Figure 1 (cartoon, rainbow, N blue to C red):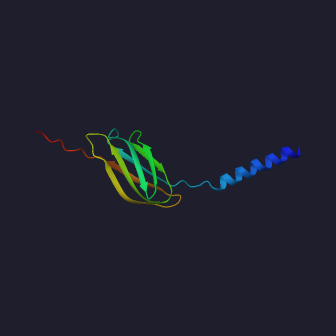
Figure 2: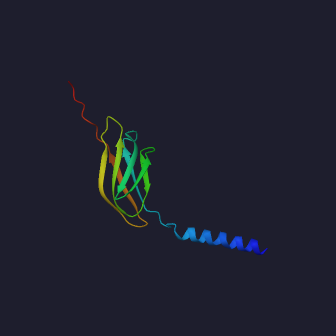
Figure 3: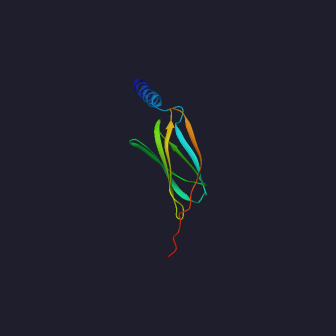
Length: 110
């Protein structure tokens, strides 16, 4: 019985220790791409941190640390990649970058 109480105490301590390090308010960047089939993925790059997100039905989101980020949308031809600079994200904040309209590349005729 003493061994059971001891192990329960250790498990409780580990659970409490892990929950102390969890961020209660998620810090994130969200946005949309138009046209919805113009890109498959997006990146958030900030200092040494980076995150990637698949674009599903034109929407993307990143769970990130607070900081200054650059968001890069990796477009599919005939669209150009899009880049948003200096996106400031504070602790517990969700930043909506809105709709990113992808531009078509110019096709040169010979």
